[in-house]
Image (cartoon, rainbow, N blue to C red; front, top):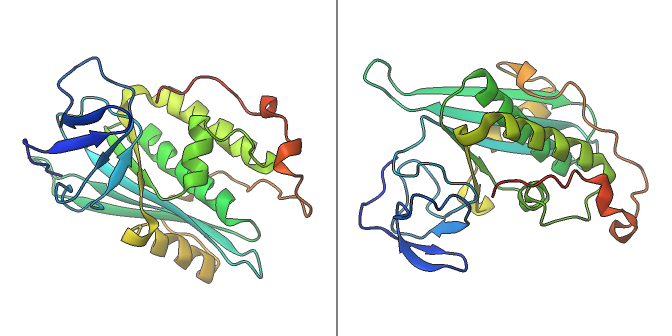
Amino acid sequence: LNIGSDAIIEYEGLGRCPFPPTDPNVRIMEFVILPPHGMDGLPSTLTFYTIHDASRPPDAVIFADGACTVTTGASGAGIHVTKRATSDTAESVEKHSKFFAASTNNVMEYIAFIGALNWVVKNPMRTLVILDSQVVISSFRGSRRNLDPHLVELCNQARALYARLGDLVMIAHMLREEGNKADAVAVDAKRCGSGIGDQAFFPDHAPIVPRRRPKCSAIRPEVIDVAEIPF
């Protein structure tokens, strides 16, 4: 996880700035790492939504993803974890997934995100969590207020976990076409009808999705926990 010391980052709304940020008080921002300054083993373009002590790489990187078969509802959520090598241990990879009999893709994306946050709760280390779901990112940040009711519960669960983790978690969004490492993990759970690894990282049940969804305009924003998220 190396990035050139002379890398120039284009910050949204802030113009072009050096990486890492020269101002130690800058903690809330959005920025995009532009090619060719990609980090080893990560997508070449990442939009970061949290930065804490960006001068050193994270100790672990988690890709989170969900999968769903539209016709049957069979679904899976998965995370792909890479723990960085240290002086005492070699780099290691973990895969965890869980099968759900009937759900939707957005629900699975959120459940995978919750699984990633729970992994950090159990393994407290500086971790970069990478998602490819705009729905999860935008609703989690609070910029998307018209959220389906069955996703509100998951959004609030994720916010509560994030609040417990403090500076341990950095969150980034990747382009789906660059290939999410957790996609195959989630798809395998969906196809096989069973998960792998520690399934306790994921919620026990997926929220029930109404057969007829209410129009987004009819959903009151107040149903979402509007507690401030620090990014």
